[in-house]
Amino acid sequence: MTRTSGTGPSDRFTRTRRSVAVSSQALVRTAPLLDGTRAVSCTPAVPGLDAREWLSTSGDTLARLRDEHGAVLLRGFAPLDAAGLAELVTGLDGGLRDYDNRSTPRRRVDGNVFTSTEYPADQTIPQHNEMSYADSWPATLFLTCLVPAATGGETPVADSARVHARLPQATRERFERHGVMYVRNFGHGMDLSWQEVFQTQDRAEVDAYCARHGIEAQWLGGERLRTRHVVQATLKARATGERVWFNQAHLFHVSSLPAHVESELRADFAEDELPRNALYGDGTPLDPEDLAHVRAAYAAEEIALPWQAGDVMIVDNEQFSHGRNPYSGDRRVLVAMA
Image 1 (tube, rainbow, N blue to C red):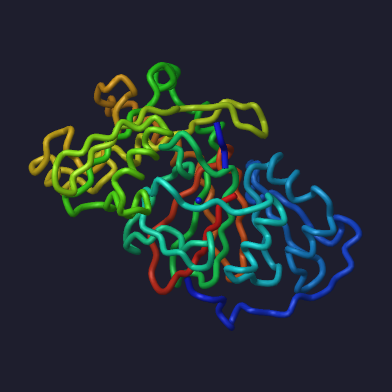
Image 2: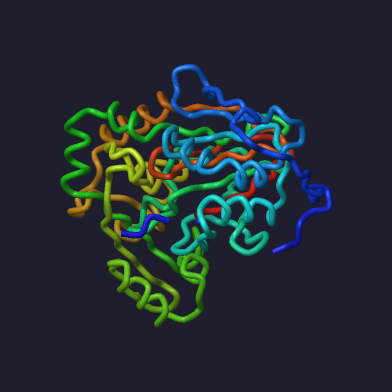
């Protein structure tokens, strides 16, 4: 299983790199992101240190920090634009991944660097591991803040092993026994279109993609397409071997929407025609108590710090989930996937 998610750079963030002789880890201070958490922050002792310079001269330090701690915040380094973020990703992981089998609206900024999910500012994006609704996902996420929100807009993260451990054994066993079935209905004019999700206008290409990934695809006339995909609920994290919670059942389930929206959708659509929904892998409905346990576990494990301009967050996508808090004002965060 593979475990791997425009316009030109803004003049405001285009800078000449400072050449700094980096000979040891002493140039970067590392500390817990918050007391009692594994995640860490890294702050340069040399003003204006470029994270790409540090990466290129400090061996496997950054990769080791990511693997050991799961989430690493780089704060106080020289700001990176989209091209600079792509260079950092390539330097650490060898290349960027495109955003295929899409679930949320994003815009391509430069190559495979995208805007973060473009949902209305007053909405919360629940905790989730990127593309954990699929059979292939990015190993690492890289996010950089160009413009922090006036208020709110944090990208909280949560330790996926601790989320798994918090869940009742019966809830874990039900999900692990059956997996999760994700059902999506395209062509109602709601949510993303199948053309956006699969990045093609060709139905044959959609069918071929679905066949390669074990997705059941059913064309229902006109632009209507229904897909069903059964994948993992948990997994052993590549870097640690720990069992982690790794799915988006709580996010895809119709109950994740505001109550009045869920009510309207249920009035307009039969259960199997909802724009998106999640079931146990055997096709039976999810137990509301299980969903409540999952949401409570995420809430208990969330770590949220306000963004500062120039911050870069590196997230092992299996070890940590992420989300987004509501915000006011302008907010510009870019994301790249390795």
